[in-house]
Image (cartoon, rainbow, N blue to C red; front, side):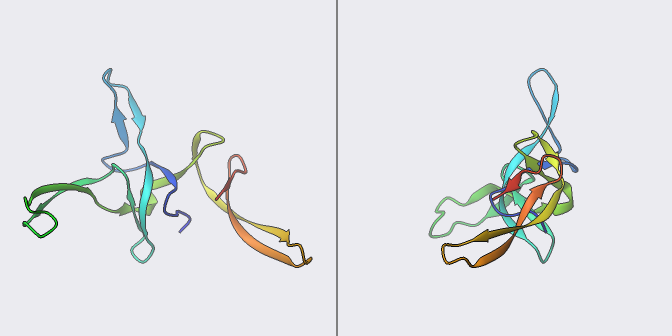
Length: 121
């Protein structure tokens, strides 16, 4: 899975794919990844797939009632947002070599945008 917590993603499929403004123009919905679940191949995105959950009163929530929260969506329905190209992009892996002050060479894998060669941190 090429998506990490904190990444900005674009929803490419599902009921939350677009947002409408006051004039009715549709734009793709973007959001920040809150959690990643690699075993089930799902991600939780901020402001996407909002569900209503009925909660009993507890020590923390004295009131109880209906709570709205984000539910996970499948990772295949999101695409990483490339800030350099300002478009959704596919992700590749690039090996970067770096040397420390002792002269030791270390290789690290870095996620890279396929469109603009932007390195995701």
